[in-house]
Image (cartoon, rainbow, N blue to C red; front, side):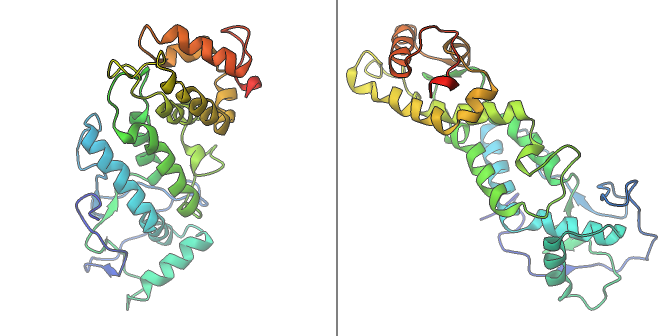
Length: 277
């Protein structure tokens, strides 16, 4: 797999051009690295100048982010930067750095490239927060054709973070890798993943809740809401507010409301859905 068009293999070593030794930069906070580098340090734009308004570019960005996370490349570069700045390393940073330096004869030289690729110009959580907002579709129209990334992109990213983000630095206020993304955006994306059960309604004449064979979508949707109950509660979701977030064909809207009320035992469009799940 080609991530960012650069490499397709795990870290195998460090290419370190000979440069005059300079005083190592010190972060303002001695326990936190500083992701700012001088002109003598090569860096690369993760997005390579490509606009994330383009769905193909967004898809490539998500795939590349997941690839670099799985390969511990973000973690490795953080370890390199901590070493440069004499900042304490996490256990995992120490482990990946030790593997990298096994290939080096000179521990004091700066590492400018790994597999011929320089460090990214921004830390991992800044890159992530440039990607994630682009995944949210507001409002979500069931009769539009959506890329799979819209409904499963966030889930793929979170799955990767839970497996591979241990030991990465966190910005102030974040308690975990997931929480580097603002709470409201996270919960909206979890809710959006539930909309996949309704996707397609209105795209063709026979895709309508008026067809009893399509009403199984309501059960699927409710089951998805149960799986994302924390997000339903956080967003204080009601049928009224839900109607502003997911748009169905006009003929399906009243039937959708009626079926949701029936299945959940709701008496009002303004009644909280979380309590009925």
